[in-house]
Image (cartoon, rainbow over all chains, first blue to last red; front, side):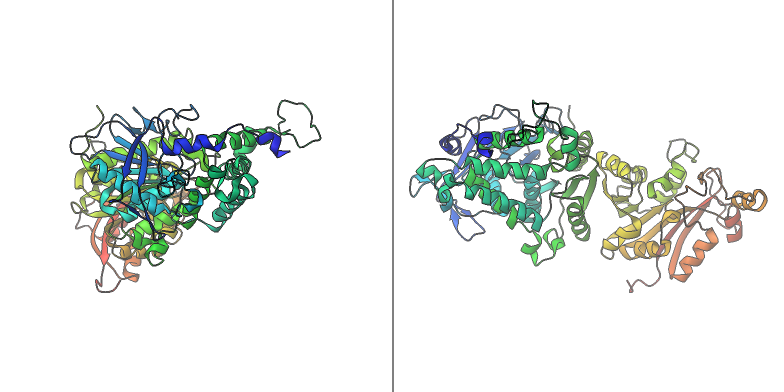
Length: 398
Length: 224
């Protein structure tokens, strides 16, 4: 039943080559002299980071904006994706004249550690064996991702970021940046995120991981070595996760109970409903570009995320004496990272005396709203960055 | 609620200077030291915060209840969060700000006394402006017309007003006495936005002041 809907011809080898030799990307490799120290207590070396940049770094290197991508995103934020051929995932936000204006700011978007689009991850080659890491790859955290990004900035000669921005897992990275490197972040824009993953979110992720692991082609994570690809498991994981990115109202508005290319139910387990067909499509298109093990690692990184736990359980301590300006944004229909999560961030920042703005945007589009056409979000991001730019002494766009 | 209260004075009828700034906001801004750290509670569309930023170079923050107000402020680059004076002031630590301002909002809070106490806990100073319910026009309407007063700065009908805790200048002074607040400065404005004579007696202010602005501080600086 599901099998028919989710079959896809692609083998995992394709994803693997993108992990090693990413197309249309800048790549930096850190050798044994510069290992990445991981929270897991081990070092990752060598380390490869794939990234994209847009715009021009100004003379005093003060206009750099790091855009952090979400769980299933990558560094192709504002240009055509080399695998899918689709536009960048945040082209409405990042680009010439956009709120994160490439004519004003120098935008850096790296693929996260543990990813599968050119930065070291489970689909990359383990130099010790000459074969893909698979589950031999160390478990990574959001803090590890940010540490790696700091290494990239050092490599680029950028001491301070004008801003770091991101939604969902990208927002977690923005918060972690402000907590780990307060002196390197002038402004932070965490959108639709929280300072710790909730039990419900961990639960959803576990379902996704179990779906991957239940696929016989997963082969204990050794599919890149032994052949095959747990695409059905990964597609199911994606389908489940995708529901959490939407909202009841958005699903109803988009699909309702409409049938897919038929007038009546078939009394079978075909995708009778449009919403089923849509989800299957989401699942299939996802496995074409994403490595299943990478999905396990990145969901795990989000699960482990808890900034307060790193600071004796007091969230405000994570941002003590911070000079960073924050703009926290949430969406009314986001039940994955509800407004209450953002309020907790705001309370902690207030307690720390931080300069914080917080806006909740009314939308029925759910968690995914941060990726979609939300004029209010654009106005807020633009206004926040303009204000911060003035304080930073950046030249107005001209 | 807070924002609607602010709109009492956002109406075109609010007294403005030739430069276009609201007189009561100018008065408030003149009470603030340059470069101070300021929290504007119920900041509406951010007009006061902007004024304070431009004329006083303050490090300004705002709380606003209405989502539209907040989003407008943030889009202007102001540091404003969505929140409620009645509940969210409790989250701020002691002595976070030099000034906490409550502009035309006191009468719209559920617990004015608690709000005022929080303001003086989290700020060294509090600045409170409010419409004076003891103004002669208000008194005459109730006395002779026999209905709840409606004036230019209190335009609402009794059944849809956000203003649930009206007070007079006299009432407010008494509250300040009750909770042990030091009144550092007070100004009353008449209906044309002109400050009343400083040496006028309080009963005169209470009768002819359409609105009042108070600069307050804690009496006992060691207690917090």
